[in-house]
Image 1 (tube, one colour):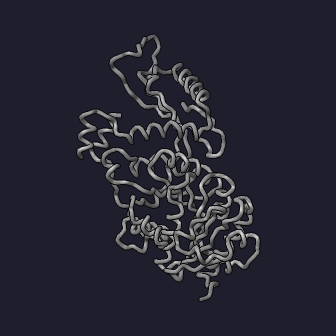
Image 2 (spheres, chains in turn brown, cyan; image 1 turned 90 degrees about the vertical axis):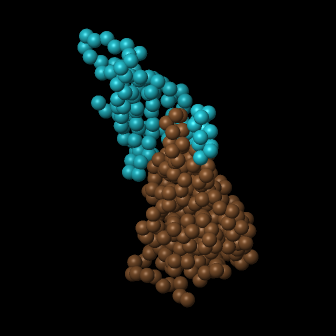
Length: 272
Length: 120
């Protein structure tokens, strides 16, 4: 299979999307792997790149940890050819991983080096998803360097939303379009007024919503097995990631109404 | 449903309302970059400017730094008890409260320092 199979005459065709959150542990890596796999299922050529230098994990979520030879730092420093660092997914011929280095410091590469390293893959891939490290320091800046869009992952909790807000400000200043992904929503808690609803989070953060993932045990089961949850057609999370992939491809797929405020929630809000 | 009823009868605010108002507080701080003291003095200065022209309900006075898709706005929400009129006295405790929400919007750039401007 030729990797030089551009879809049109333009030099750069693929879009680069950074997956970021500010706060750690909200599901960036799972989101990157799952949406990457979902886009590949739709026939898109997808590269998922791990920009969490020193703390890589995208490889284990995809079950590819034992195949790593070269990494993003090697590509950025031109130690190897770009193609040499790519690892093909076990499940799909369309999905490739560019792992992070586990031994380097976060600031071993700068923004220009990462941008150049990732930009050269635009010709061969329709989508390049970049898994950003937590935080808003150098690692975050590197991950955003080449990005056209950002998926801002948050959970419906104060610390995650607060950090997402910071990140949205930084992305806007860099002219990277932010899209909101709400992770680990619990419909029952929303219904009884003990969790911020999709509407609440969207209202607070004020950016376009790309999708909502419900809390789902299958995500952990899939991670245990090193297979993205989208391969489990019965899982709620898997289906939601597939819908997000569709939206990223420009399909018009409505976002299901997940635990919209019950009448009691509304009354509670009036009372407060 | 049961919890909803429980909350309803115990008149206990659902915890998400608490989360909302706490988030509102930290985000105004984060977004404006003003310290508590600076925000307090900004509020009281704003209040006194508006009070020159209107009788306002200070309890309801609120400042929000709101992000929308296209722009970020500073929303100054000042419930007006009644319009000040010449030769007429108004007590703030008047029973006839005309709660008009006057939104004075000042647009600021995301990255620049907020420059509050009260539009008439």
